[in-house]
Length: 145
Image (cartoon, rainbow, N blue to C red; front, side):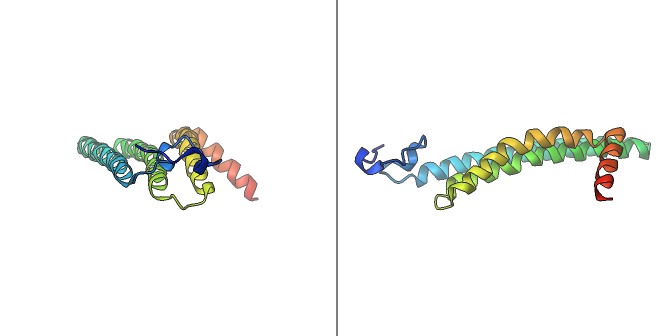
């Protein structure tokens, strides 16, 4: 891979070598995107298959209250998975196709990817607990009043 001569690079030298290469990087970018999409697609298919099996098992439970509890856990898991995958795919798309986007967009998406999943994961799973849910509702209502 050839690179731009140092006098042409100036202060825009970055850790991303594809930005300063002289050759066309569309193939590398497309390949990377294909890997991300195929990984996400395979994960999605396997997750969907596991949830079909889980739903089949849950529907075999006789008690409607137990079914409701099991489905509540499934919703929490699906939310946690979505909160992980949506920022990851967004970051990949912005990195590959957002070459002309302002640097703020790249920074914002990267920070969302790094911060939102670990912050939201405990919140998602703790909302299932009745005591925590009641405390959160009480806190929100007290601020509104």
